[in-house]
Length: 121
Image (cartoon, rainbow, N blue to C red):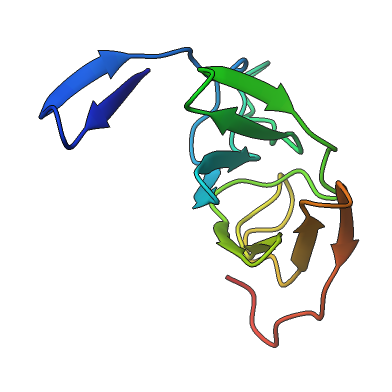
């Protein structure tokens, strides 16, 4: 994994995410990067989804695994606002139009379900 430093106009190798995934939700909040879900490597021809949430601290070049989310999903929107992460839409192994919103409270380190969207995304 690499990080781009705007002030130095240079790329630097940094610690990789502890698991291999594609299509995770990614956002930044208060100087840290959060990665949730994604497709895990194929097993027996199927891509399993992840429910894991990780936080990356660029100052310490360190990943921390946080509380697993209620839903294993990939390709969702993930946004950080205030002290919360909001995960919306995406798809699971059986549902390609997830309507669920899940909210992670960064301070309390726990997930809760939010209201359902009228249309899956």
